[in-house]
Length: 323
Image (cartoon, rainbow, N blue to C red; front, side, top):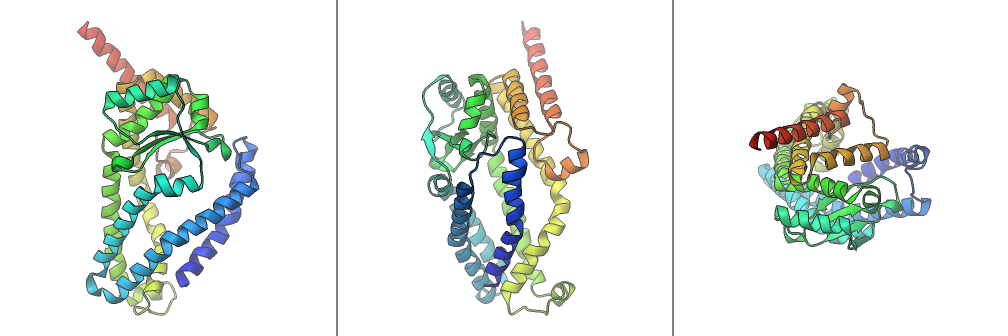
């Protein structure tokens, strides 16, 4: 009940900001297409899904903290990783369809190019789908979801409407690069290592009186829910300092995925797709470097375009030398 109360209070505090972002800021720049009924329905579904998945997990972790002995944090970490893989399995076919409609991508030049790209890269998936992203926003995107035989490729309908077939192919090649270069597996491994360290840290802090005293809470080692709530309330303050490292690691993967897309399609198509996406999304082209280092998982537009142009020039020079 303590955890539920904290989650609900946090949600209530953030709710006005979420509504302002959707109905004021996004509307001001012409991006919002979400109706109030859709927004409220999404909110209700999110709460329901969070309760169905989150409450059993929280109860399990608390039970392990109480009864699994000194090594409870190892068992809790195993439960957390199992939960993550369960989400990966359930999201494409169970969770995502609760919020959006997915239809097979219709035949046409874009689908023909994408199927040829997938065959060229040796990538097998359970389907190529269009998502009705235009129901909520005019922003466009594409992503892979699931793992193993449940892999799906999802394209926003807004993306396919705005990009030329060769540009759509280049964007998908970039996303495909993340999979082929094992970026997803590396990020899962990174997440597993970090979560293991956090559970070990939680096990140590839960027994330390100074941890509770420093937060003006009576020492409560016999009440694992208190330790759990305090830990996750305090953790973001310290992990924020690691944000530039995480951003650097993510940006490195973005550059590698851009290079993969340039090899599989063309650097020019990727550049034109990026320019169009940045223009359509009104993205900041010259972000503050310090702010960007903490908050941006993707490199600034100018750096990505320069990187792709350098790759294109290098390819052209190599071809000329061979000729």
